[in-house]
Image 1 (cartoon, rainbow, N blue to C red):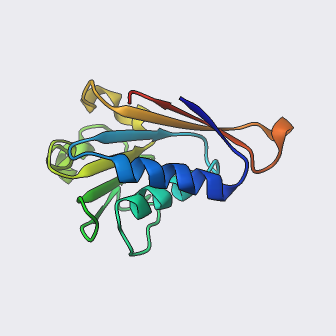
Image 2: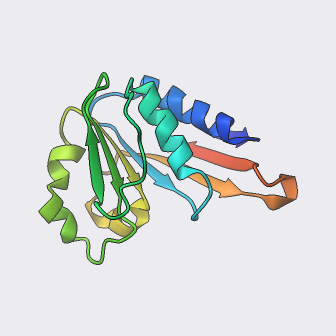
Length: 141
């Protein structure tokens, strides 16, 4: 599925829709360059899960857990992971295979530990279509 987002609110709403439809133990891999709207998408996703607290990127903590929605939400940002073995220290398996929903930014850095069945969301800019335009591709649903 390919969605065109013409403004940040569109990206938020797509995230919200996917959050509303998310099932336990589902893993979303969120990919895209810096500044494409991954955080906006994630904030919408969290809203779709019913999470009301502020959501931001866990760049330095690697993972943030939110428990006030309809499912636990594990938000990973693995951009600063030096080696995939660091994920063991975090206890990623409890998140990936538990009753919550996991969203991983920069998932390509930890491909070798991802389960086969994931939903991949890729956000891309196209400045020829405008500063706020984003092409969002969702695969694996």
